[in-house]
Length: 598
Image 1 (cartoon, helix red, strand yellow):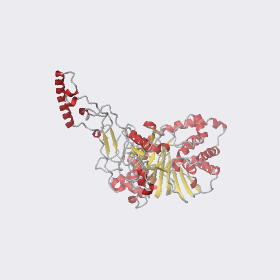
Image 2: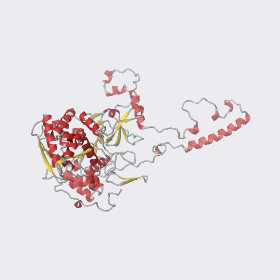
Image 3: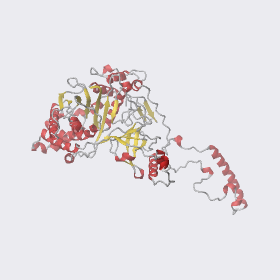
Image 4: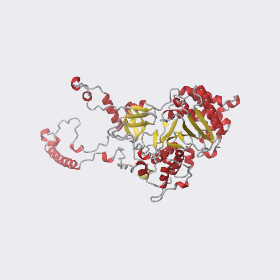
């Protein structure tokens, strides 16, 4: 792959080569400096990034750092060899004089003294055991947790009046060696609200009412869904861009693809800190049949009474009109207040949005992945241009939300946007629990220097402070979260099975950013979850089975790629939790993840 960075000493492509909107705002001004080659780390973070620790060499047999294994002592080896020679000499003399001699006739080092358990001959004490299996930190953690759960041994009774029932008294009753249980709390759950299941049923009714089908069309519906699925999974160059302008295609899209998109968006929108009040403006780019505004209506019932102006932009006017009709019927079926949400429909193609508008929240769902990767320019240039265009549409201090399917290309694109935004002064709000380097960037290595590892992998490092990454592999993990399907309507699941496209698993990748205000970039919160404070962990994987019948989940924290154990097993993926920061950083030998007890 071509190195997106210019040779050292040369300047980056000038921002004038990329079309840019007027009145870009504070983030876009900083991104101009990024393209022009200004010192990114010193400008965006107030200092140089932390030095990346040197990786120790790894023993290929034990998969442990070579320097961590105890080397045999030369002095003890020489002494043992000398004693062995003397013993052999004495042994020969004793055998020549009397082969059946008693213990008293043998040399001092050769007597048949009963060996105690655990004793080893002197010459073997310093030899590394070849059959010893390296200790697994996960198994060590499980062993300690089991020891902590064992019944406490009897202690001498204490007088609580002497200690006043203080912490010292309680700790005195704790068996020695018992690890304190981490204090864990859920910061933001990843789940649909209680009303989601019923409201999604009302949504399907609204689709039937807004897009009715005659008997002949209904018989052809399943085939139309399959044909559209083939078109959507084919090459973008072979697809008609205004495919949703056709009535039959739009009906198939709304009943299957749009319905599952709404199911996917609901838990994401329910977990975000949106902070929308009366007269707030939302700009939805590539809105189509208004899947995101409809999901917002279901996911955040408290916003239904707010006076919101929602500007929906798409190239297909028919899709916008159909979505507006579906949202209006859904409002009636859910008995929502009238005239609180004002929806404006604009036919335009991004980056054109028609009349200029500054939004408190700029959203885009299932819009940019294919266009992003069809561009052949360096990934950093593409990410800077897209981030500048999105931020120029938001108010200072506003928010940007990009949601894509949980596929590898989407994860890499969002990782690139995230790094560019942080270098420009923005703050990641979700799903990231920190603003350091992304530990799961997928195919995107970073915008920093390149890293050569054993001449087999050549990747770019992140320009952000270093975190622990997974062990190198051909396909690196990317950030995506499985979506809970408990709120999906049974009618939608049955229809999907009848079509031949069942949804047994649904994943999502997203990025929510808070943009800086003028003069605010230098004073924004940096390094969320600094050492000494609680550790924030975002669970991202399905349940993982571990030794001794235990389980855990892979996660993201400010320490990097994390394996969360304990209480994390009982929480759904996507949950943001806060737990006690481990005093010692332990690594999982298999994945390279940092172990975090919860």
